[in-house]
Image (cartoon, rainbow, N blue to C red):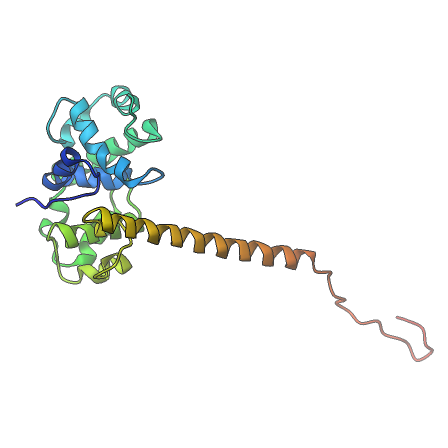
Length: 223
């Protein structure tokens, strides 16, 4: 049975995310520099514009790059940066075709540990350490994919009762909590950066101290 997700905050888009592992993976890829709902509604928009009710890795991988970029750019755009993100989605699907026969579930289906799944995710185009951990947490918390040690491999994103990422969103209330956490994290990061900059300026403005003391000769003359 497919999980009921609430990441896109749109029934049709969320339904696709729940039944299509590729859609969820693409949504995770798109989740940067745009609101989360915009990112996770992207897979549904892509499917509709391709005339399909699901995403197919082979079809996306083989799609004409210019046409696929145009599909992304059509208003409303799939992403704030439609050209570059269209390319990344195609690269992701091409990788899945080459390494997993186009089936994203093969990334975790035969994995015995959470660390193994995380490492495989980290090898995907467009996925770094953070995305890999968040998606691993999403798999464990909402898709029931829970290989040994998955919480530990997901880091803080795997913590039970946390509200840090898309993995923790199950409705409007949890969405608000995740947003609040992210806002506080941004404030803390800005505060730390400001302190670092201030300290650097103070260090640069501090006059250089004498490196060599003046010595006097026995006759009272400096040497």
